[in-house]
Length: 259
Image: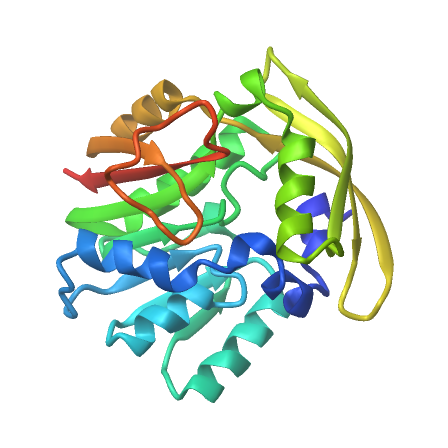
């Protein structure tokens, strides 16, 4: 039986690219370049690359990039886009929990969750962090975003998502959210996503996502040999070290370095 995130992305590459949260790619890549000093010799691993928006943009800027994703549909779209853009990106169908890379990359990125926080258990999510850490060379950087556990303590996730989607799609969002419930014991949110896939088929999926607080992320990364863990607020298309994490940030931006 497919998990909800597998069903969501099995025929949703075109619709995904119209979502409000996929529109900030150039600005996000600007931040990535600043973090690595625009060093074109650094190989980049894009975990949960989806339709390849960050992979392709970074390849345009001269970097060697490998993108991995669980969805064949998303990867097919990524390959077509890379060909149209005239860039070379190696896209691999793989489970982020089971990557075999070992000390091969100077940078790993995992943006817009990239699979992390979508898994059914904390152990499965942790395995994704393990894969990323193992793939890095000593001194390599790991940059990712994840759901901010401070946000649902003070705000309604449903209201946030509905407002952002409606603004981006001028009142006609591709997805809607209903029945969101946040569990204070597990920091998991469950609810229903209603969406229309690329073939026009309407789907209703029961989702379950894990939110993290900064202290959890910090100790997990340190347990995997990552140091200099820094956490910022995540602003769509405008990542910045100047954004101190707030309870109003839906996501947090995490930067760390392998010892």
